[in-house]
Length: 397
Image 1 (spheres, rainbow, N blue to C red):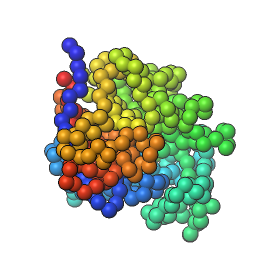
Image 2: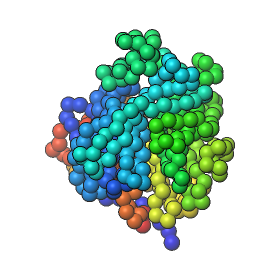
Image 3: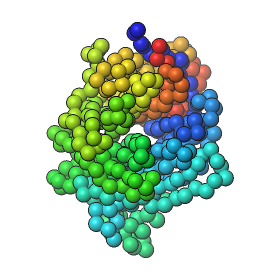
Image 4: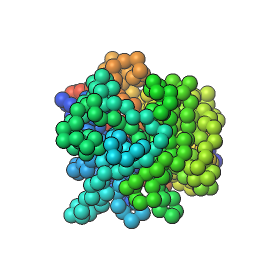
């Protein structure tokens, strides 16, 4: 039996006219609700996120208060508790090789339940502390929520940027093992060489529901890659092996672990068995779907989804071009050709088009929802330009 993707037409689920929305990150919580995190404001470090929640598989969305400033990753425990981890780790002056991040534990489906906010500790010897001044040179400036953490981590009443060092791990994926242990992937700059601004991907472990994390292994390191190894998606396959897909700045690479993250195979380039298309660039998101099959989205340039019916990570196929689908939708809706999405966000100003970071969630039997941001987007012939989030339902048939 041959499978292929069939898509409904995309719809706008959130939009604004005089602001920007970036990089929708979504996952399905244990209580069956969908949680969608969206960055707003200028596209830079320390731009905050807000949350939307859907209890009807994306048909309607409601705003819910954010628990931390800029969620990097979230995990849904089997008992319904939600763990959220912030993006930025800060070097702790009182403990060697220790970084502090904001964290929160809550029950989104129980509005009156207690929300526990606390400091998460990450212990890693492979991460190089980077002074905050480096980030300020790239149009980034931390707003109020982070300065309390900076002061606490440095032990100063009013820390200055020269006192603050960021590091640890930028978390991108978490899974929960059968014994309750959490494994996560995260990336940062390596200790050596000290002037290198390419990344390594690490595996971290927590046995206390995400309160503390310890470096377990280096998943991938190759400083000859354009960006090293950074953004990574993690799943546990049906044979219990771990599988990771990682951004490198060009083509996507993948790797496997047969011992729950202690060691990893040498990364290989992701290839399709039915096409010459080479999956590449940013933010791979891999999900387990029906019968252990895999589905994955990635972007920039464009927006793409593929699947692996074997569930091994070795039989990727069925490429579906979501960018082309969106442009065709604009054409149907009467949008002039010169006002439709342009495509290659590396060759034009990103504010003209899309950040091309995609979200993916499995909602039912071979049914998935894909999310992506749009900038200065024209939905139909009579529409004003908006910044927002588009959602498309995709079926594997």
